Image 1 (spheres, rainbow, N blue to C red):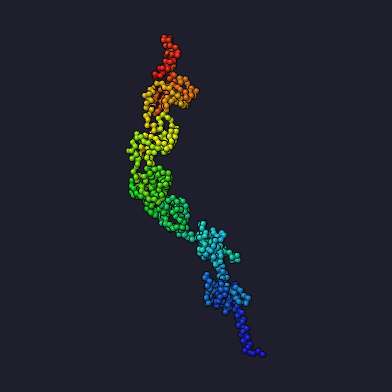
Image 2: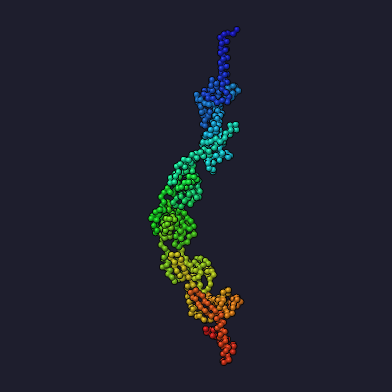
Length: 565
């Protein structure tokens, strides 16, 4: 027989168990619920998930970066009801709950085209791996609007992204940062277009650098800063003076709203120093400047920022010959110069370094007047003459035409050797052109001056043929003295070819027609000599009847007569 009280207790016990089981059935597997931490030990964290139903989470899921448990008793956390263990206890997961929530967020962001924050964790093939709660893929082409050379600099950065594609089943998410930048650029561009106007000063960022100028991002619109508008001075290579990413203030020079083209200037932010350069740098003034560029034709000297002058290579030294200014000047060197010429229109200033010191050529002209005999060593031999060392750094030139009165000089090396000491006579010192002219043949009297006295017109001379041409033959009447017998003066008869009548080396007699001492020319005639001989022969033959001359005697008299003439 069952006791009534015991029966009541048993019915109450059965009811409690049913209620407990019912409460546990209300918690669905795979559901994310909010629970309260009720107990923490070294291995698990007990969490009440409702109706006094408890489950546990491995403590490893709740550790922070320092290895400490990141929750405390009484904290409420979101967990996933994962499964039961072998003893029927609920196993919960905070990590899985977080991932499921992330995927829900990803799906919502993807559908509504909003943004999500993520951290680029590493470079992978074709792009980056990004932590957005789950690992997502960022293609390299979606990192920036412009191609990026240094992709490694993005690793570790936390940025905002759009979601291009998401597939929860394949655990695949593709991100884009480029689309966000394009949207920002379009917004900036609209704002810039509303603000931009000619003459306005704007701040920009250097986007690209070329040898012909800089491209400046003014806010969604790129402006070109041409190299000619960078400085009032000379900029040879912009990459040496600027860096990408630098901020810079510029002035709008022109703007085509339809084509969205902007020309900007940097030098226009300051006054043009060339406007008053003529007043500040008068011709003849001596001042200091800094060597800023060296070329094979001279050195550029900065007189002030934006104003440079050129020392031509010919204005560097009075007597020293230089092949390149870099052998004597250095970049950054401070030197003294004299202003020779200023042209504000072409922005050119001519400078001189050598005129800081006295002109040694002035002293040379006084020291070596015309006609002075000087000795020197041959420094160099050229086809047009020889250079003779006179003083340190100063050579005199004996032109090929001043080597000999009589001999035809083809090359000075036929008569002289480098290093040979010779005597010369000073012909001229040209201070302005810095030329020292010397002569060798002038050491002797000019033989041509005596020829007009020695060989009068109509006199007969004898010599050897040295050259035969189509227009006549040249006859050497003295060493180095030649006369020309023109083809028309060769014979009384018609001459088809000079070579038919004569050969080089033949000895001939000719009549002197004229002597041009100034141009050093002698005109001769063989034809006139023949005519004279024929007349003499005829006269003497006719006289033989009266005086008994024979032909041999007559010819002898002709020869005697020619010699006397």
